[in-house]
Length: 264
Image 1 (cartoon, rainbow, N blue to C red):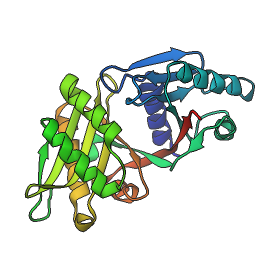
Image 2 (cartoon, one colour):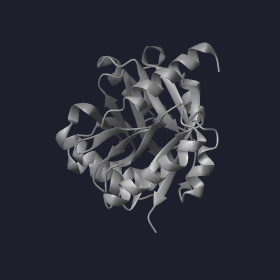
Image 3 (cartoon, one colour):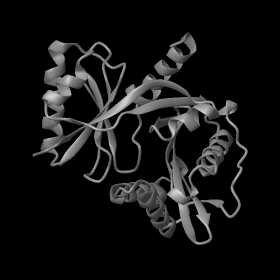
């Protein structure tokens, strides 16, 4: 990793992890000892976003056990430890597995300066983009997501509805429509004071893949981020979206893996 990438990763770690802000209404960020964690209701995202760079093997097991006990005391059936490849100690992933966490699919942490991204939206014939305005639009987002990814959107539905109702300035939802049917949906989370905005979603139904819809959704959100003064866009990218984003100017800084603890 070159010096610029190292500096950008350090900035990301500081602004988005060590000094994390709540990612929606009704949740709080707690800084306790060697970790920073988010705590909310059961349908919110609950988990560890940062651990101390000097966390050593002697303390790690106790820190992990303390987080399990904390979320159990809140009555949460599951929470996530969001582990990055550069987190320490080196064997932290194995310690999480030994403590009963389960690893999910790793993703690539990609970041790009907003000023270097294209904000020109080019769409295939028949597709139009529009922002999400109300609960009906959220249902269209859910339909597009479930058709694109084949996964349940109920928890995200709760989170997006809460953002739309209580923190609309911190959230941008986008729909790609063909007639009255959604073929893709995406969102952007804005983190005031950090200079970062996060891109999420963007799954496209199979019939419309490979036609530029995903690229258009990125450009559309990049334009909004630029208008609002954000300096960097961040994505936790899947294997499917990572090559597209790299071609658009994003650089890989690390990988991140969700380690999920589910109470038995």
